[in-house]
Amino acid sequence: MKRFFGHLILWAYAVVALAPLVVMVLDSLRPNTDVLADPLGLPKTLDLASYATAWTEASFSTYVRNSVFVTVGAVALDVLVSLPAAYVLGRQRFRGRGVLIAYFLAGLMLPVRLGILPIFYLLGSIGLVDSRLGLVLVYAASGVPFSIFILSAFFRGLPVELEEAARIDGAGEFRIFARVLTPLVKPAIATVVVFRFVPLWNDFFFPLVLLRTTDRYTLPVGLTQFFGEFQTNWSALFAGLVIATVPLVVLFLLATRQIVEGLTAGMGR
Amino acid sequence: MVQAVKRLLFLLPAFVLYTVFMVYPLLSALADSFWTWEGTARRGFAGAGNFTGLFTTFPLNRQLEPAFWHTVVFFLGTMVVQNTFGLLVAVLLVELPAARRFLRTVYTIPYLIGGLVVGYLWSLLLSPAFGPLNAGLHAAGLGSLARPWLGDPATALPVVILVNAWQYLGFPVLLFGAALAGLPPEYGEAARVDGAGARQRFFRVTLPLLLPSIGVVTILTFIGSMNTFELVYSLEGAQGNQPTGPGGATDVLGLIFYRVAFQEGGSNAIGLSSALAVLLFVFTFGVAVVANGLIRRRTT
Image 1 (cartoon, rainbow over the protein chains, first blue to last red):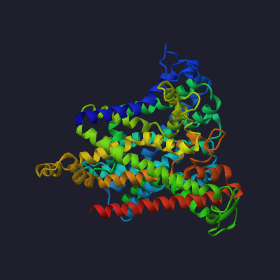
Image 2: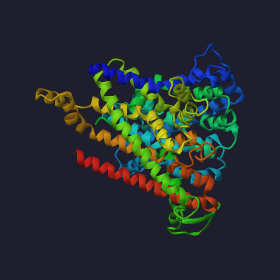
Image 3: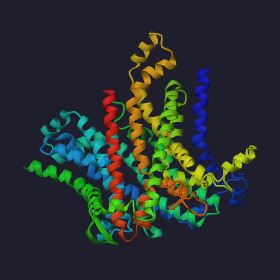
Image 4: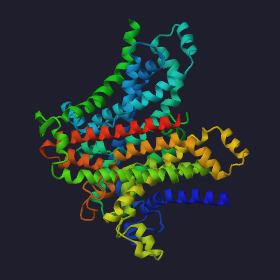
């Protein structure tokens, strides 16, 4: 009896969690007149017209391309600069190391949004307002604390013997870092990549402020524009939401473990 | 020496990127908050002028205090759902392993899709005229319950909180799940041997051991609530008082910060919004640090 109620709660909430997303997908596949007449109906045929509308008329193709460029670029730059720093901070002892670690990790608690105006004028002074590259730089910088936190902990956990053996074989510092240790922290890199990808893909605040030209909009700002222009075409609105959602759901299904690890980083101790 | 130079080269890219695009802007915002601005030109030292200005400049003086309380209610509402229903779901998932991975995935998907998409999705679902929710109520013969959920000042904030709780429930489920998996089974066993029932074991053994996790969920929910912006923006618009809107009933601090900086700040927008940024940070950080300290002292 108790088990029955337990299962009932779990599955009932699964319905609550999924129903809005199911309605979103179903309505995106129905003609707009049907959606407005009965928002809870099922598709009679597989009507992809709304996706065509969103993709071409509402330039979702451009938004998706911009989002991919900005997100991938920012995560790549973030990992590229954080890896060597995390290696040094995780594996070498030197004066000032503690201060540096504290300096980087302090960023975990700093809400970068509150610096939006100085960021705006800083990017303006180097000609990077209304630029996807400017967004990449800000996003990458805001990811450095988390990346260094995860990566340096992982580097620290690797056995010292690996380095010593490589050094005896005559490997230099860079070789040890790039060829010996970095391949071993791949799981941590995967955690960083997946976990940084999600908030950057979803971020709305920075592109809202920093981007001006529709051609450069990422998906979230594009979505805002779209909801203003296509107010009455609900089927297309739902299709636009599906387009913004699908990459994340796919990523999640491919990388559940990394997401769970990132979310629970530092827990369970 | 060579070693030191190499080390520097390894550290420098991360240091420069982080310092220029994160630390410097935040320190600038701190400095800017003490000056009076006219557009982008600095006019003179203001001392605490911008901080007092937040409470005396129209329309901010009318909006800031309600927005503060909305944010507090938003935090409390979300937190209560996460630490009760979220905890219940996490416990049930541990006790009923069938389909655990599938269910955990389902609960986490809304969290992943982000505040803006969630907000726009629910703005359609809750729409008064064509929305599926009201349509469903009518179809079920409960048409009298149908209302403009997001436009009615009485329901707007509770509905925004529920949507937020819906989006974030996967987070406490994962966190509590990880914590429950890390609990030593011996304690529960010992209590069972001593004759404790399931309810007693949960409240006397499991729950006290989970206090640190409840603290973490609470603190992270607090920080998230202080920064809430996208969800309210997409559900209610930047103004929250459009013709169909609830007349500011859902204004939260994150939204006020955006409006001061980019819409309503007047000529001293930089000074006022920087002062608000500093206050928000000090308050959020201060509460988080004190709460964290309390939790640590209670549990060690």
